[in-house]
Amino acid sequence: MYEPIRSKSVHSTSGEQSRFPRHSREEELDIQLAGHLAALLALTDELRALSPADEAAALGEAGRELSEHLRRLRGGSPVRAAAGTARGTSDLTNLHRRAHALAGRALVVAASRADTGAAILAARRMEAHAAAIDPTGSAQPTTTAGSARPTALAA
Image 1 (tube, helix red, strand yellow):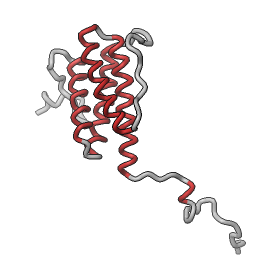
Image 2 (spheres, rainbow, N blue to C red):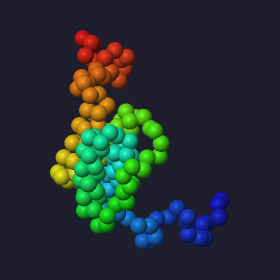
Image 3 (cartoon, rainbow, N blue to C red):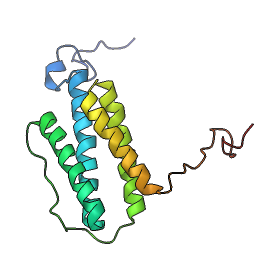
Image 4 (cartoon, one colour):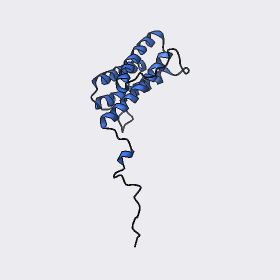
């Protein structure tokens, strides 16, 4: 009833795998970790440019550590923002929140690839940004998925 197919299917993957680059799981995790650390370094440099001198010194040291890890992962020196070059007056709390989220992603990937040094660095950056978001140290109660009530109050 139907005419047989005379040409190769466009959906066929047999013999065509060499056309697309394939990375091992370890290579993919390296790429992801390098990307998260590079984004965290960019935010750290932006925060350093906008912060007071005492915080800027600590952020500069954190940037150096991030840069060392990136150099180890990528084999070259990462591009850094020059000191004192800010794109404008951004909300520091929002930047710290973004940096905290990026450090969390880097921590997950570092744990997946069993990179203890990167995991420790990411955890330290998470702590530093969490402290900058909430300097009093009092964590706000979180809510459960199906409830609008804080878990500290739910019982």
